[in-house]
Amino acid sequence: MYVASLFSFLKPAPYKPITKDSGTIDREYRAWRFRILYSLFFGYAIFYFTRKSYTFVMPYMAQDLDFSKTQLGLLSSILYIAYGISKFVSGVQSDRSNPRYFMALGLFLTGILNILFAFSSSLWMFALFWGMNGWFQAWGWPACCKELNYWYAQSERGLWYSICSTSHNLGGALIPLIVVYLAMHFNWRVAMLVPAGISIIMSLILLERLRDVPRTLGLPSVEVYKKEKTAGKAEQAKEHALLSVKDILFKQVLTNKYVWILSISYFFVYVVRVAINDWIFMYLTEVKNISDGFASWGVFAFEIGGFAGMIAAGWGSDRYWKGNRIPAVVICAVGMVASVIALWISPANHMYYDMALLALIGAFVFGPQMIVGLAAAEFVDKRAASASNGFTGTLGYFGAACAGLPVGYMIDMWGWDGFFVSMLVSSFVIFGILLPLWSVGNKQNQPQHSVGRSRA
Image 1 (cartoon, helix red, strand yellow):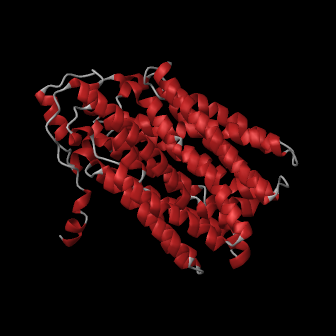
Image 2 (cartoon, helix red, strand yellow):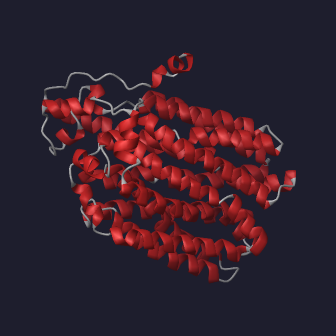
Image 3 (cartoon, helix red, strand yellow):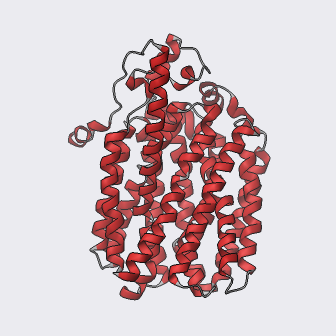
């Protein structure tokens, strides 16, 4: 009872009477959509500062504390397992919470845990704080997913969802440059502390900038605003009513076969994405004879390529496949296979060629990384969107965990060939599991409430 009251501030904001003046509605919607989008964008980018800081201090920790790649991979896996479990739990919780407070609190706590990590020295303390960090890292995207599903209609959501998702790439591109510079000129502990401080400041900005769903500001639903639905009393009452946890789990998500298929494909998307993100810095320095400073630009190239891939996948699924997200993922899987093979067989001492290949891999990896979660959210009732997205994220981060300890072990045992084989196998599985659904995704164009019932 005490814990429930302690977190009572997370409950959704109360709905206000809908404004009658159409001019006011249009003006308010335009202003709030822009404000919420840039807040989500920069807020989630900073989540990456406290999630990926460890990735780029790994070589310096290994040198300072004499850790093996298996031990380093263990810490990565702990974060991803904690994140994956929390992603589903927090997804359900986010559907029943105020995203303004939910996201801000999560970012604040990740900053605190990064500070505690920086002042630790033993493996078990690292594991404790990094696992807790993983849990609260998962409070970021479910809040973004809820906001995007309530403030943007399905006919436009692919583009805006992809724009917001490129925050991954902004954070992922900047953090190696910041952390490697600090680690090279100071030490790895300072390289952990600076991103932590930035995240705490950003959490306070989110608290001031974000708001709950449109109805809490006296605005009609986005479907009504975009003239996709009428403002009937039944529809208004339906949106006002929260789904129970039981309905979210057993009528929307866990009994939905398409959510399961998308989630399994997400597992393998994350194997590729996280393995490249976490290990490519060490690969470039050990195999390609690239200095630490230049190797950090490899991750930058990967993230910038991902930026372009996300925008193209989201816009293309809206423009060419009318809201069907599956074809874009299948095409990207083919591109992943080709670009990973090209990086594997490329010779050493060709830095710019490697950077171009990493940008290409990023484009083909981050497109599916964004769009699979969106597809899962659109196969259920909007009031269960965060939970569905969170469930795919849970399986995705189990895949991410496999990119930690298991891949680290494979590198220790079989060298970097084992790394590339795991990337290729994962890419082929994504292609094989989603190709049969090429046209099934068109059913996403049905009204969301009927989609949820037909899939349950």
